[in-house]
Length: 237
Image 1 (cartoon, rainbow, N blue to C red):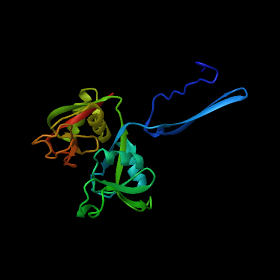
Image 2: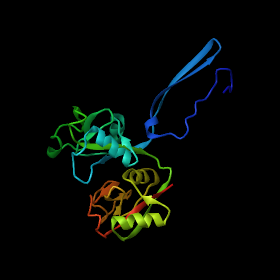
Image 3: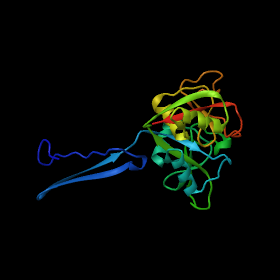
Image 4: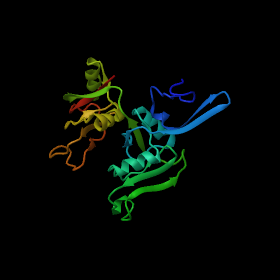
C-alpha cells in the first residue's frame, strides 16, 4: 500500500454499482500514527420518471423501488432529481424518491402542474410508504454493454425472439435512457422494451420525430403486446 511515504495509500473501488454512491472514510493506521480522509463518491447518471402499464400513481414506496431495480436502475435521491431538474427535467407527475419523500420537478410553472408559482422541485413531503401511491423517479448510470435497434413490424414476443437471435435481450427502460444519455443514441423509430412499453431516444430534435423541441426519450405508452407495429431495442453485454 505504501507509495511516496509511509502514510501514502490508495483506496480502489472496482465494479462500482448504483448503490455504492455515498460517503466513504479511509483510515490508514501505521503503528502509533494514523491518518484519515473522507470522500464522497457520486455517479454520473440520468434520472427518468417511470410508471407501469396500469397508469399513473400505482406504486407504493416498495413497489416503486422494485420497479426501478427491474428497469436497471434504483430510486433516485433528492440530489439526483435536483441535478436532473437543473439539466432540464420538467415532469408533472409526483414520484417516490429513495429517501421516502414524494416530489416532482417543474421548469415551467403552470396551472395543471401545481399552480403558477416559482419553478423548482415541488414536494409532497414524507408519505406513508405502504399506503400512498405515486409514480417513481429512477436513476441509472453508464452501461456496461450497448443498445441497438432492430427494425421491423414486430409483436412483443417477436421482439424478444429477434434480440435472442442476435445474442442479446430486449433492452430495459434504464438501458435506453443510459444509451441516450451516454452514447448519444438517436433513433426516430419506436421500439419495444422489456416492460412492454414502446419508446425511442432523440438527441437531435427534428420535425416528424416526436414533435418536441428538446432531446429526450419519447414514449408511445404500452401498446397491446400482440400489436405488430414496432421494431425493438436490444441490449447486449
